Length: 173
Image (tube, rainbow, N blue to C red; front, side, top):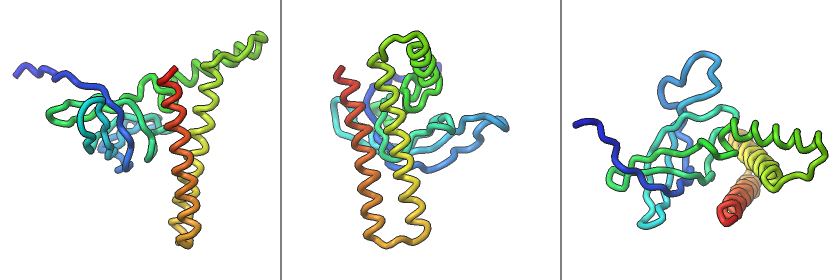
């Protein structure tokens, strides 16, 4: 009646499918878009479930199939909100701050911090995962033999697993 927002619960969401643009994406030249995803939500307590959600993403670094990220969800309706803010994989402000800090460290001779090393590793893993996905898409589009597709699929799976391993290490520290 008074537009009360139900309490959301935190969990993790794995991107299962990028459905594509979701309606109007903004002004001309806007580096963001509203993208629809099908996700599998993994609650801390309870059974996993799947849902469709949309989120405003930066076009330079949108979540990709296989990515695991923070999410808020309503346990009753299963409405899901992906949490991209603060995640260095998707938040350009965080990446810019890390690069600026890294630049300052290099210019002033200080040793690299653990955070800058993690940022470098995140950037590298994201780049490798996106390259693997693009190689697989290209192979599928040109009708590559199944053996080649299997090798490329494994390459994508390995890249995603390395991302998930890094996230787990980051959460444990």
